[in-house]
Amino acid sequence: MARDGELWQGSCKSLHSHPLATLGHRLYPPSDALAILRRARASLVSGGASLTRRQDQPSTGRSGSDTRVGTVTEQVVAVLGRGVVPRDTPLLVADDLGFTRGDGCFDAARVVVRDGSPRVDHLDRHLARFARSAAALELPAPDQDSWRALIEEALAAWTGTGEAVLKLVLTRGPEHSTSGTTALLTITAAADATSARQGVRGATLSRGYASDAFRDAPWLLGGVKSLSYAINVAAKREAVRRGVDEIVFTSSDGYLLEGPTTGLLVAADDQLWTTPLAGTGVLESVTIAVILEAARAEGVTTREALFRADDLPGTDGAWLISAVRGVLPLVELDGVRLPHDPAITAHLAAAAGFR
Image (cartoon, rainbow, N blue to C red; front, side, top):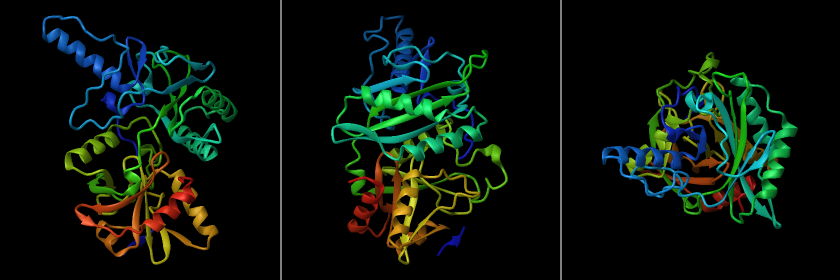
């Protein structure tokens, strides 16, 4: 069945790959920045016709393979050392290394409103992973107290009532300045994950690395949530082209690893299994860690193992796990139907805090 047991993804060359995008020293969400560039190019091609939409007005156009969320209607932006700022405040200079090289890290967590107040799921764990990513990149350690205070200020300013995403961002800062790192956060309304929580269809894509490629290669930044995210976003576009919901990366030696934005969890032999972290380059999933702790408290054995795609039909089920979207049953992989027990899914979701 299984044997017991990204990564540095290159410089980002696409605005799609970054939580941040800048034009003329002004910060825009990626969808806005791309739309501005496209309209400007169209204007030049047509002989300089004027743009009909202000540059800071979001575009709602989408290409067939575009995987971005639609127009943002609810968002809070906050900067370390400054606090909450208007969404259109300039925050990023043109040579910021997070923008030009993907040299930085981020983390993302779910925000939910309970008893009338917004709260962040598993905040301590997310801050700890954020700090580990920064350390791997040799960035200054994020000051936990300062980030917590900034998060509290942003939550106080958040007026949304549905699920949202807290994104923490830390870059190395401007390349040609000694001004230090860029540190900010956003809280943004989350896309509706109701359908995905009922079941997703997936396809495998090779990551191009052996399952132990990261064991002695720390410069590959295995397990680091870096801003070099173009490969992950390209994989999500490939899912759209293939007509599936999700991608599961495989190693060059044929083992399942993780999704572009999810971890992998498998139930088999009355145990819960997840991908080993050592050597694989897989990101440590906060939500999977929470589920496994709850399972062990109930007397369930949890183990690490590498599975192949053709192992999964003989298991009790497989799930793609996301801190924001929750527990997503993998009901089909590469056209093969997989076992799915809704009762197990509900139990896992409750353990992760998705009720």
